[in-house]
Amino acid sequence: MELSEEITIPAPRDRVYAALNDPEILQASIPGCEELIKHSDTELEAKVVLKVGPVKARFGGKVTLDRSKAPDEFSLSGEGSGGAAGFAKGGAVVQLEDRGAETLLRYEARADIGGKIAQLGSRLITGTAKKLAAKFFTNFSEQVAAREAKDG
Image 1 (tube, rainbow, N blue to C red):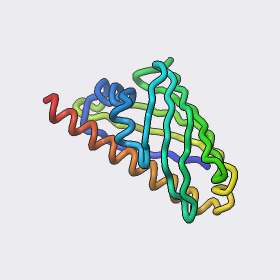
Image 2 (cartoon, rainbow, N blue to C red):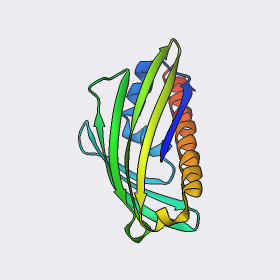
Image 3 (cartoon, one colour):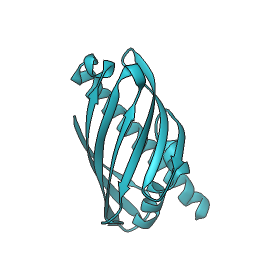
Image 4 (cartoon, helix red, strand yellow):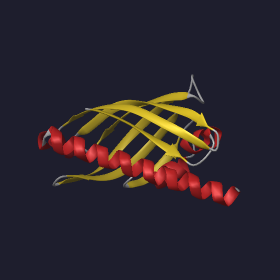
């Protein structure tokens, strides 16, 4: 499965990049995220509860960041398991384009899934993934805008 999207965030690129590296903002932005632990500058661990069709599961996973092209671009890869519900692994490339007081964020993501969730059908899974990604970026944009307003 592959997803791509772009969103304009009402903050300068350096602030958006900093927010993408802030576990507090990320946890508040990830739908169903119960816990997000930063083990190092490149290693995160998450616990997320998701419902895909009739299957609801708690996923635990690890994410590894590659910041070698930052702040213009960075990539992430990860994998998670939801026990009997299945597993997911994949990655994304995120690009940040400076637009003055705003930032254009583009991402391209791919994921492979298996287990009970994979049996639900690609249309349901792709639709759910698109909804979750849209919700994440809406939440993220709101978190960044709130921080911008607070920091002035």
